[in-house]
Figure 1 (tube, chains in turn cyan, brown):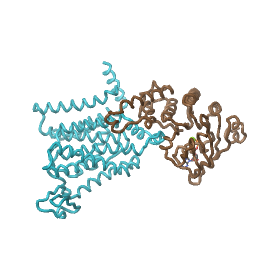
Figure 2 (cartoon, chains in turn brown, red; figure 1 turned 90 degrees about the horizontal axis):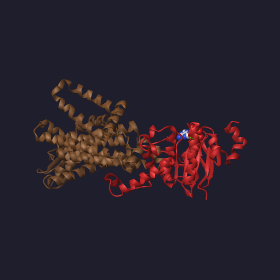
Figure 3 (cartoon, helix red, strand yellow; figure 1 turned 90 degrees about the vertical axis):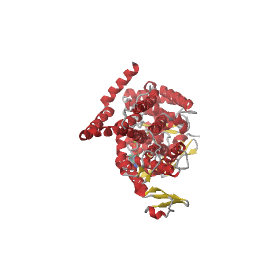
Figure 4 (cartoon, helix red, strand yellow; figure 1 turned 30 degrees about the horizontal axis):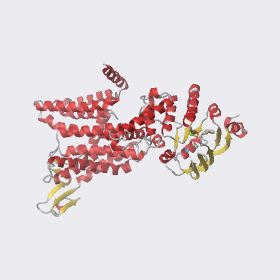
Amino acid sequence: MKKHDNLITYAVVIAAYAVFQILAATGNLSSHMKGLLVPMTYYAVIAVALNLCVGILGELSIGHCGFMCIGAFTSAFFSKLTEESLPGPLRFFLAFVIGIAFAALFGFLIGIPVLRLKGDYLAIVTLAFGEIIKNVINAFYIGVDSKGFHFSLKNSMELGMEKEGNLIVNGAMGITGTPHDSNFTVAIVVLLISLFVVLNLVKSRDGRAIMAVRDNNIAAEATGINVTRYKMMAFVISAAIAGAAGVLFSHNITTLTASSQYFGFNASIMILVYVVLGGIGNIRGSVIAACVLYLLPELLRGLNTYRMLIYSIVLIVMMIVNWSPKVIEWRKRVTSSLRRA
Amino acid sequence: MALLEVNNLCISFGGLRAVDDFNITIEKGELYGLIGPNGAGKTTVFNLLTGVYKPNEGIIRLDGEDITRKSTIEINHAGVARTFQNIRLFKNMPVIDNVKVGLNERFKYSTLEGILHLGKYRKVEKEIDDEAMRLLKVFDLDSERDTLAANLPYGKQRKLEIARAMATNPKLLLLDEPAAGMNPNETKELMETIALVRSKFDMTILLIEHDMKLVSGICEKLTVLNFGRVLCQGETKEVLANPEVITAYLGG
Ligand SMILES: Nc1ncnc2c1ncn2[C@@H]1O[C@H](COP(=O)(O)OP(=O)(O)OP(=O)(O)O)[C@@H](O)[C@H]1O
Ligand SMILES: [Mg+2]
């Protein structure tokens, strides 16, 4: 029965993809809706990443958008740089490699101090790192010309570039004109791969070790589990997946800025809300919660006055469905009777 | 050669000499009891033996190998497994996974194979599953394999902790008050379990216990701790008849 759990998750994602594609092909999807599909999917991806950190590893991170930010900027930088010299699909693939690798690297570097902390302290420090990443990127000016790269923390004039030089990162104005490589299909593939990685990890010896560390790190050590190593492993994989979400993000918009709206504390909290309401440790729940909670406020734009009211009611209902012991018991009864039928 | 040899072990917390000049020699296959009043330093001895605390002085040898300054993880890999006075299970994991965590370092495949479910994954996971089931059967927990550890009744939680420790294939098993909080029936069952572990795995066991019936029933030798110091040491019968022990601990 547990074996099929993962297959159900993949099937749900693919079915949702098919439904949206059919709606789009038959002209039943407004262009506004179409524009929401890629963001919806990368929020699902980063919710999966955060659930690995919060639910499986048991460490509350509220700076995960920082890793998304790293993935977004490093990959957009690469894509802008190679826009003319590389064919689109190869360039986009390499952009993923770079965005994921840098996010993983930062996950590792930030993990060294952060994973020594526990609980609230860890949460606060991840939050701080998330803000630092955003603010540092806002101060970067990077350009390239025939002499090579130019770098400044002051302004674009300081770069001293040749006239025909290419200003890639323009401080708080960010990166403009990243090639529009993201689309719904690629986003869904990235989501499926993220799910595959996390769900398979959970069912491997490393996954069990990670959950053992979560449940009792003293007992885990006494059982011979290298607590530091497994914490780091989970944190880095989580950051890497958040980086992949960032790549989708930056290749879906024209102007990429390290703004609070997308990469700040509020955005990280919003993703934490997806994870908590989808069920901590419940990976499939994160995907569903991210999609529903992302689309809902957008779909309710017409009902402006009641929008936030309905949104909060949905939050409460989801909380009850996923957290009330009685309802969980009822859900189990229903699913097991469905299985028998 | 003795399996465990401890000489002159000392540790202070601030001004408190929690363990002072502690010595013990345990031979292979022995069931050895460590007793003493509350706060005598018994659990601290376990924490020293497993590298949770580093001693101020003294030396610990396991099978001739000096393990005094090693980390908890290294000491476990060297062959010491333990249970805890206040049960420490992986509560949100199923019973069988608790045991599988204990097998983690013995049955290996790479992280990549684990993520892709390829290569040695299937074969080794099958071995892990078989071995975990074998252990659960020994401890009569096989019918609970998918129960969350937190939902097990108390007696079975204690058993599962022993099963998890045994999964690491130790040379020496340390049990910290395994009968604490058990009713007489559960205690009797626990004594059978310990006897079984000894006969089936040829295990050497050091056991902390307050339940004197259990101690006198199964331990061959005893060390009595009092205020961090060894009060008396030797064959169980002789130790329990020692007048000093009776006044200090047995309250006679
Ligand atoms: N980490 C620590 N820091 C300070 N004091 C400690 C620490 N660990 C133990 N102690 C002290 O050392 C003494 C011995 O404690 P220990 O837990 O070893 O006793 P015990 O013999 O296991 O008692 P019990 O039968 O109640 O379990 C106690 O006075 C305790 O308060
Ligand atoms: Mg104790």
